Length: 447
Image 1: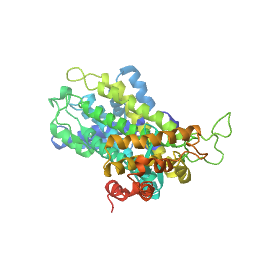
Image 2 (image 1 turned 135 degrees about the vertical axis):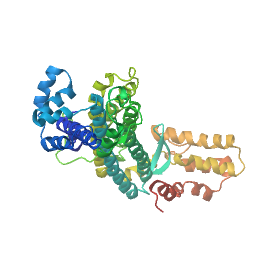
Image 3 (image 1 turned 135 degrees about the horizontal axis):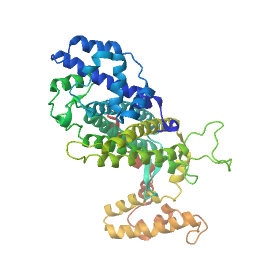
Image 4 (image 1 turned 180 degrees about the vertical axis):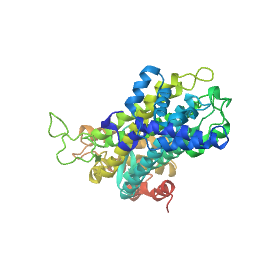
């Protein structure tokens, strides 16, 4: 987690002051519950809030104590006692460190999820706006990186919208699963603390009760959370790579906005590089890399160990901060994306009509030609066009560029089955867009 790839809205969740505030609230709410069931005096529970509710915790002092105790929660409790006084003897009554640490982490991860969900909402809004803007902007669809058949740029963006709609649903579910509270004491038996305390703290902290904690909240929950972040990051990369490909000089159908004064290269003043989407590709790799250690944290020794602790102290902030930054950056890329419909049209026509080959194939089969024979008829006319498109070869017997429609019209087997007007109709670009409205209705839920 470094400032270059961080937003303050997310980093504040992971700052020591925030963490100690959450620790205090967990302890103070537990004291309220203990007072409610008669374990500690009510006035003591009230005094704990009165004396510490608005305190700014001294991080340096806590670190100083921890250097001696070698225990972070004890260091915090010792610092807390310094200004609470005699009532501090009731703090942490019947609890264990994991009750504080795991419940706090659940709060932090749920708050982080809220920000990530909001990030996706902003991205969805941007994608929808641009998708409708280019709903019928013709472009070439590619499979294996090769021209396939026509599509629209709006459909490309609609696909991304649908994918991030699923990402949002996964984040909502991940937030729900991670938002559990454990105040169950050593090895999770509630031997020294009443389960009603856990119920109370969970309610106050906006969490649900962990059905059974073995002193720690089961780490399969955390694994699912970080795996979800990894999948969302992969969706970020998918869209980023699409934009990177479209910005290549040979394609240039879309590109990142290049601001006044921006420089693309220290050596070559002409360069306009896709630096934002390349950055997103790298950030996605980082977030994905944090899913594996989260999964390896699931298998702990017996009721608990702390092999998960060091991992979570790093991946908790790093994964959420990085994904938050990436989603926000991607939203900006989409909002400011420069689109070149004229280049899309130029690329559509680059292969001399070959993008309509399937329509010709199917039309021939409808005329009674076997699929195998129809394929051979179309392919033998397509290959010279393909070769000519890249080698500049003249067509057979004349001095013009190779044209797929013309070759088909001169093919006796094809012309015996398809009239000139029928062939012309097979090269109608709008044919490919007749169901765009249907797809948009499915994706955006609008007629």
